[in-house]
Image (cartoon, rainbow, N blue to C red; front, side, top):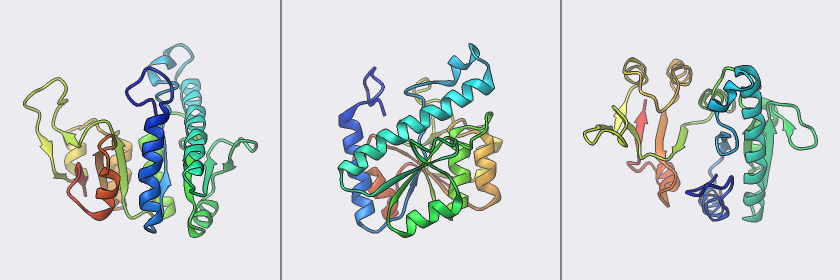
Amino acid sequence: MAGGLSSVFDGSTLERIAGEIKEIHDAGVEMGIVVGGGNIFRGATAEVVGRAEGDTVGMLATTINSLVIMGYLNKAGIDTRVLSAIDIPKAAEFFTRRGALSHLEKKRVVIIAGGTGNPYFTTDTAAALRCLEIGAEVFLKATKVDGIYDKDPKIHADAKKYDTITHEEALRKNLKIMDATAFSLCREHGLSIIVFKLFEPGNLRRCIEGASVGTIVK
């Protein structure tokens, strides 16, 4: 959302992402989008207000981000709806599985905000849960890195990247690209995950086309 800037939102980054989403939407791909809130509020700040309150602030931040993304997608000509797990009727529809599926059937992009609606759950877990609820074929995790490594590649020059890995291996090796609850949920229900670098132009389309991008967890 912030791109490489110190600001909360970077317009050029958001326009590019909206363009990539439009490309696959126009090709007939149905998608739900779950966005975090780190550009506005990060968990470390929660020490001041406590975990439960901090998580609520974070969930509200995801709703703000979702409304901003909807604005850019609407500008790109994509019919978009924001559904939030936190009831904010003047800002977004309340999330229900039936409501999300109805919008997807009408070829709208659905942005699902507000996390799970409960504290102590990460955005990753919320995304895994929503994937299962809407019957998604794959969970695409868009990040700043180009896949899953055995250790932090920014710190360790000898870090090894995985092209494929199982949910079980990821959990056993305690890989930090996603939290254990999200990995476990996907493993239990056989949901594959593709971890890829969002800031590489065209990667989203390549994932959809089945090209070798990032790391596949299956």
